[in-house]
Image (cartoon, rainbow over all chains, first blue to last red; front, side, top):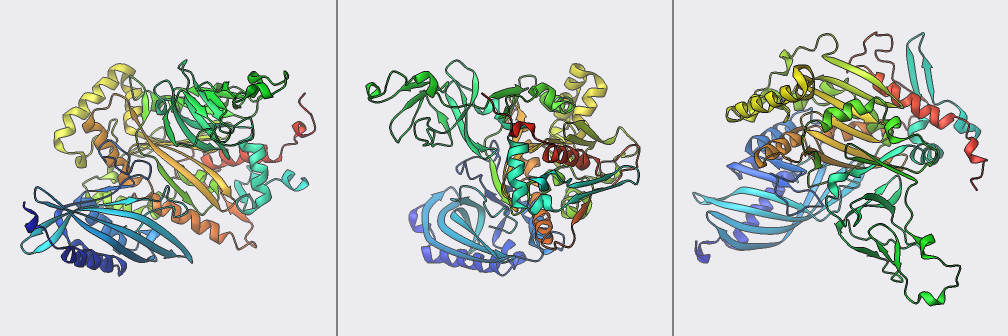
Length: 163
Length: 430
């Protein structure tokens, strides 16, 4: 794929900002529509941020089936860690379109995600590595990897919402 | 210290009532006593020998409130060293892991070898003849020992041996260690998390069979969606399920698994193409151990608590989990995946996948556990409600995994250690 086929940064930003808004608003069914049918969502462990989920214990390594189940659980009433829902606010910045790899468009962006719950504020800092696909006209998310700079989930305790 | 001598538990075996005073979860003085009476006296898990496979490999980690170094020396011996320069205190190892011939203190460049011996002191001629390098080696816990790869340290030199300390827990560590013919290993990737809750709430939770359905309903829903029919398993009558007091505060619950197990209980989500492989693994276990033990290793799940703060849950994968209190209402948790060294890439991927469905701070269960523990801790602010009830199954001849025998085993030992007279405090060791 030649570089002129890459999406512009503003087109990618529109996608990522829209995604952030849907997640912050708990519009998770609509968020699923941004993903390809075979999407994956990963959060590597804080001590092996570049690891491979096939041989490294991740925090989250969802295939498409688990992503959809995760959303269904989060929107149900028995995901106690998110019932009542946390408030979250995502700051997405430093968006870069790095190039392509086969059909995948490689994108990175920095994030600061604040989670407010029971009057505590927990901050998740890191960067995303996205693999996007062009499907018809729209950009879709084939892979999203949230790589934490936090050295541990402390004092957060968990990643119970979609990071 | 009169207060610490008061019992924290009501243990009425005749009536069948067991209560724990919630001060055990909230009182800063109680935590200070726990550090002295529990964490300075018990054998405490430090790490697994597979984490330092080669000479010079090291891991630095906090254990029982102390920064320690787990290191395999140039003589291949695994040691636990206390990470503080004997000169003026700086930490001599400031990396989380690596391989080193020496540890050099960055402050004044004192240098220790991988056995902890002091081998370099700049301008050593400035010291008197009384200064001896041999006196200034890195400190080490007075007792360090290894049971089937699990390395423990004890800061009490008069404590019983690790072998005796583990008591009935050895049988269950064996059921885990026997899953490999070459040895088990800690898989790369540490889950480092926390909970805004007292550490003993996680002890209780880690082998609590009663909370499974209400707390983890969403996980069981997920299992059903993926084609696992856990309701058909036969859970009637022991020994298909049991809770056992293993002595010294250790306890276990064991039951036929509701889920698939990498070794070796096949379920549909693993894929039809893996079925023959699972059957082959199972045959191998039958040959090694006989049908009965093979069935136990492969088909039952175990939630094992080793007093005071090591959990080995051999369930849909094997997690090794240890945790330490930072304050009465906050703990730090570290968890790992344990697997056979010889496991193939495909089996390893399947194991990790199965691990993450339930376990860990992003799984479909652990976050809800953390939520419940934190909820308990906030609830404890109602000081008028002074006691928690842990009486379940107390009058039953064969307590079930959904009873609370395992927690009573922990609390009895904890209470004994927290309230026994401490002659050691007045005796001075020469």
